[in-house]
Length: 573
Image (cartoon, rainbow, N blue to C red; front, top):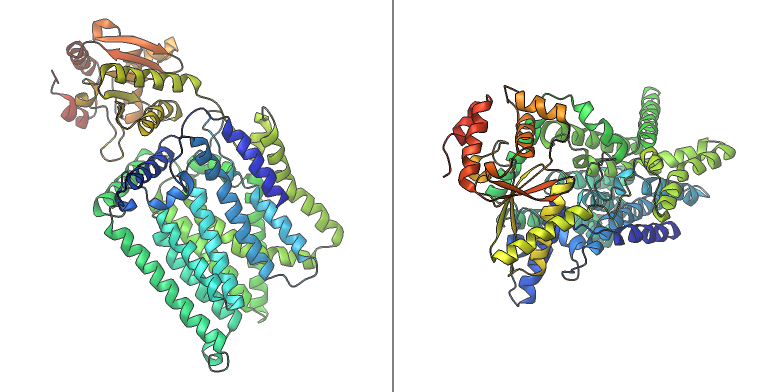
């Protein structure tokens, strides 16, 4: 409790320094909560599943706006970081303590809880080019993973105690995961599998014991029915709403296909190697792999000697589900490590208590204390960094965490400039962006945030070459009519000359670079005027006809993909 309190205070200090609103997916969650609460506040009891953005389910409101919409987005950022840590540690503690048979086992479980609380995946704050974070604060991947681990822990503890109440809470937590992310369509059958497996492990020949044990009989029937009904009804509600409508499912599949196509020629390991450290930490990754191999070896040894135990099946079952998650991630989910989190955290919460129990029995006392101190050291360092005014970049890299906060002041000001321009012109502005990283995201998010505060006021409408629906490409009919263009200027003169001289432009990355190089030297002769300069450059389109003609001249200077000509041959004006 003391460690969780210290973590909460440290995380709260960091989130309070944020000046940029949440970006991309996180802004979707924030927008969802704002619109739902606005409708409810006006007396319209709308179905939250059908309030836009419909691709984001209402369960995310537990993080973004649990008690109503707040102008203070920092509270959302805090909850997105802190809640998953608490849920995961509580789930692990409940399950580990239910299996505590040895004197002093609680101290071993405490070591395990503090180990898990230090996983780097929980400490990815504001995006920063100095770190290879798999996501940033405001995302719900850790939240859904912690909910999955908590649901699994509650269900397994309920089996041991034959507690219908715990089974009910675990079922609700499991069903709630589908209201946070669609990955739960794969998780909910796993919850049921874990529950059945634990029932057979703990109670053995369960059907033979029904006549003798009324408590077990009632628990088994009621829990099995509750799990099936609750999961089924939750899925039906989601599929009958806009959330899991055919349109949204198709859009998500298209987005995953585009993501896979972007990296189809890149080896998977080179894409995710850096994400392993920022998700699990190489230190915990190697220790977990070693412990897993040792456990498998001991199980194989007992099986060969015909001394197998039913408890071994629990480890094999949860390891099989982890492998299933890895296969699903590689083949269907794209190269983003965060999609793996529910399977990894579920594996850890089930397997680690037994591993720690064996370590407590077989290791000598002096080595247990030494190992415990080493295992708790990463969390102590994380807490120290959270309270540091300027956390050491080197130590953050060593631990795999990113505790950045309070950056992007220039991008926030650029977003405010565009909002003021929209209000002065009394209309929505169209901004075309070349770039999909954090800086353009902050500019966009500032416009969305100001619109949430004043829905009646004009705002920004951003378009990009990538919309996760169509192939990635600059489209003339979207580019030329824009009011402003936002891009990264090419400041290296050698790179600028090389891009101008490039003959063939045959991939989206090169296409973005060629356009950025062209815009870097553009002037009012091309219908453009620079209005703001930082790391990004913002230019105003002052003459759409000149820009359209300049676009045609740029096309003639390079050879593009066939689809590019199909999309862009016709002038706009």
